[in-house]
Image (cartoon, rainbow, N blue to C red; front, side):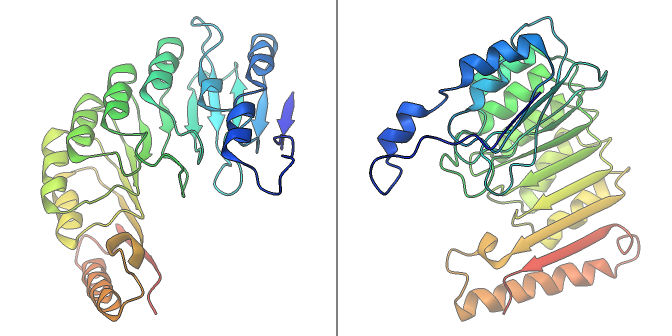
Length: 276
């Protein structure tokens, strides 16, 4: 059963007012909850009428796979439940309702066998700090045996990330998306806390330094791939200025030099945006 492209009823005014969105927010969730009891369900591109509450398991004894991917552009919440998979995967990307720690805790109570979790908020996010250190701590407590994880947002700090990688000692794939800063000090704390099993590190629009990349490579003995995707706006608040462009060029040059370094040439991949 599929539910695709559900929309809020058009407001009387030309613009979709905040009050109108609030009134209709989560308006179809009771019906979706009933469907979750009955069959596998796929929901996509239904902004506002479904919120993160959709992820609350209908039955704490059900072992389900939840897939809320395909929400990068216009969709705010997408959901797919498959009761037949033994190694569940859960991904959620929402620009209006990024997951909070309460929903993560409820999901963890009902779906303990999740091994892959992608829950970085979509960009641009209306609540950029909602997903933060408390969410990271909840993930570590609920799923200590995670193999793959994608988190991010302005609310994720080094302390929360360090606690997470310490608890999730079996992480093989880690994506950090739009984390505020990832310099040498942060990299040192993360490697000290965990990441011993890490094979793939993906840094998506996270301002990382060359020293941090070197540290990850030297301290993560199983690392096979480090993928960096950055833009000048990730490093500077005024990306169009000549100074920002110049400094970003220097950062990229450092990363390109590292790409030619023995041992890193087959590991480090760099993709840059916004350099004029």
